[in-house]
Each structure stands twice: as C-alpha cells, then as structure tokens.
Length: 460
Image (tube, rainbow, N blue to C red; front, top):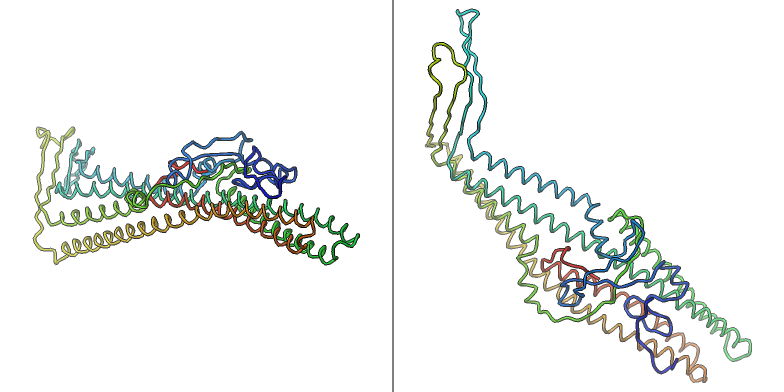
C-alpha cells in the first residue's frame, strides 16, 4: 500500500483494516472480528427521514433464525407486541370507546319489560298484576346529549393519540438501544484491530531493542498503550452487553444481530417544512382533543339549566280486571329549573375553569413542540456536519499513521511520534463511531419531533 494515500471503500464485510478506511460501521473481515460480531453488518434503508438523510428504500429483512432481531423495524415490531405500556394504553382506548357508546346510548329512550304486582290490606289472597313493555326517557334536553356524545368522542380520540405518542417514545428507546449496540460493537472492533497492530509492533520493537536500534522504554510505552486499548475494549463490551440486554427486554427476542446500512448525510429540507407538521404530533393532537372535550363539557353543564323532558310509555300484556281494557298509557313530564342555590352556575364555572386550563395546556404543548423541532433540527444539522468531519478525520489519521510508519523505517521519526499517530487514529475512529450514532439518532428524533409515526419511518 502506498503510505501517502489511503483508500475509502466499503466491501461486503465492511472495512478491511488497515487497507480500507472505516465506511459506516467499521466492521472488518478478519476472523477475530467475525467472532466478535457473529455476522457482518449489512444494509437497510428508510422512508422520509431528515430530508433524504435516510433512504426511502424499505428495510431489507436479512435471513435469521427464528427469534433473532436484525433490523430496527423488526426490533420495534416485537417491542410493540411485548410492551405492557402500549397494552395498557390500548385498554384505555377500549375504555374510552365504551364511554362513548354509553354516552350515545343515553341519548335514546330505553326499553324494558316491566311487571308490577300490587297487594292491599283487607284483600287477602288477592293481588293485581300489570306487565308489559316500557319505553322511557328521562331528563332529555337534546343539547346536553349532543355535547356529551361529542365530548366522549373527543376523549376517545385523545386516547388514540396518547397511544401514538407512546409508540413514538418506545421507538426512540428501541432505536437508541439498537444503534448503541452497533456503536459499542464497532468500538470493540476498532480497539481490537489496533491492539493487534500494537501487539505486532511490540514484537518489532523488542527485536529492534535487541539489536540496539530502539530503547527498552519504547517497548514499555507501547505496552502501556496496549493496556489502555484493553480497557477501552472491555468498556465497549460492557456497553454492548447492556444494550443487548435492553433490546432483549424490550422485544422479548432470543438474540440480536444488528443489520444496518451506511448512513447518508444528504439534507435539503428547511426547518419550516418540519415546523409546519407540528399539528400532526400525537402529543399536540392529544392536547387538542382534551381541549375540545373540556369545551364540550361546558355545554353539558349549561344544559342543566334548560328545560328537561321526561317521557314514559307502557304497553301492557297483562292487566288486572279493573283495568283490563286499558292496553297502554303514556306520561310526559317537563321540568324547568328555577332555583338551585347557585349549584348549576357553580357547575358551569367549574367546567369553564377546566376548559381554560386545557386551552393553556394545548398552548404549552404547541410551544414545546416548536422548541423540540428547532432543537432537533439544530442537533441533526450539527450531527451530520460532525459525521462528515469525523469521516475525513479518519482518512487523515490513517494517512498520517501510514506516513509515520514509512518515516520510521527511514529513521526520520521517533517511536513516540508513531505511537502518537496511532493514538490519534484510535481516537478518531471512536469519535467517528460516536458521530455516526448521533447522526442516526438525531435524524430519527427530528422526524419524530415533527410528528412522523414509527410505522412511517424505516430507519437505517
């Protein structure tokens, strides 16, 4: 390899170190790397994320044994099925649906079978029985029933948006663990590769010390670096284990083998395009439905001051002899509240106060959503810029290391300078992995902050 140049290309198995510079995940095709990762990290795509920052090609499902998760889409689907929080939210929706049906049913007359048996003193051994169908409606205003149904419907919609928000948060948690696992494994790969070079370099240095071309201190310094790499690798393995356990807990899967594609930092949407979608956010929509339900509750409270109608109709099947010719009867009652010692007005005032509070809550959620979009947009713009910078830094650090090795063979630099260049290469590759993680996660966060549903996002 020409020490003055470094190639940047991706092979089927990722990066062949040291001949190739990291392209995406830093996965190597060495036997040691395959033993660490179990399989090469392949490609997956996405639908509209961060303005083309994520491909619109649907995620490809790799062949895997049953119970093994490879893609983020698979992980989220399993997490949805396993989440008790989502299941509880679904029960809340069913409860809201039942309350809606109850409010709707209360608007119509009820039908019942009625039997009334009458006994009277001084008439021993004799009773009179009325039996038949009864149609009844009490305290009907029409106005109250209409808004009670509207409020129940708004509450039902609110619960649906609440579960959509819970799905967004679950998706972000799963994505954090998924990409965190990829980053941790990449870090293990990076430090393992550098440790292999360091081990070989120690052998070279010992030989050079033997012939008097290097000091023994140079060998010790290299061994210190190896110990530092061992520590880094151990920490990365710990993180990988923690993220794996979290994914297995969230999904109830048997194993996790991440499979993701190279990240693209293409970006052309403006912040206004994301801000325009704020009203589609589930939390904003939920707050809007809550405000609508509270406003309808004010109308329901006002209806208690309106005239109320009660109707009862009976169709008799059995009648006592004294009334056997009467087959039906009906009663109409009209009630107009006149004086309730202020209780009706207090009820309306209470409903108004709650409605104002819900309007303020909606205003707060909208303002917070606007801030979220601005922060997410800024974070992604910064993350993608850092991703590109770190990608170039890896190329430069690799080239600098190759040049230092070349100069060392000509006795133009010292061993310390070579070690410094190797340390910089290690730092830049770890920083690149971190920048890749931040770029992927910030792209998802931006889409979610603008109201995208997880089912609309096939993230890589």
